[in-house]
Image 1: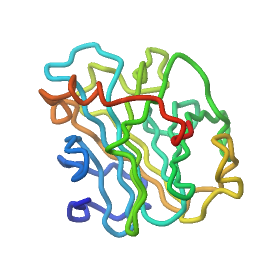
Image 2: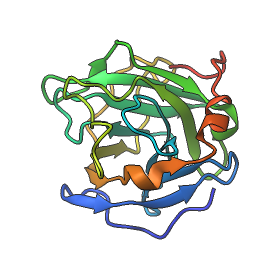
Image 3: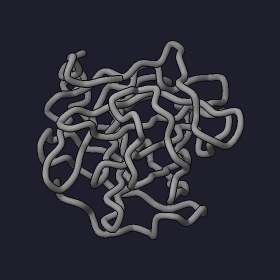
Image 4: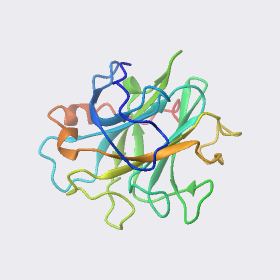
Length: 208
């Protein structure tokens, strides 16, 4: 995977900027935040000329065995969160929500994660989880809006793996770095989105 130049220091709470990013293995293009120092990255891809849709393709990953997290609503509290981490050659992921600061609880709803196998892998340098995020744009204020030009996405990470890393509901330690990034939904649009979404299939090797 080719990492873009560092955009800003992870750990700053102020808004950062994003840039186009293409996963070298799957070829999927995203509007993404990538930090070369920590290895954290998160990005989204949407349909061309998308208006009012609720689905997008997301990619999240990092270095080592720790977790990477993203908030689809910018902040942590009462927002829809995504947590993921490697477990051997598999990726463990879940939706989370938190009413107070601490390890967020698993969240359930109409939203779904369906892995894209050729964009999900663990190698000697990093791990990557790419998936179709179904009905992930909600209308209850827990996520950004489909009409937002540059929604704020929260990011968080910890280099330490969860104690029960095989469990998608595992408790996680407090993030050691966090902040927010503005992703361009226009830049996230791609003409090949409908092709890429057909790659999303539920497989037992991915836990979510």
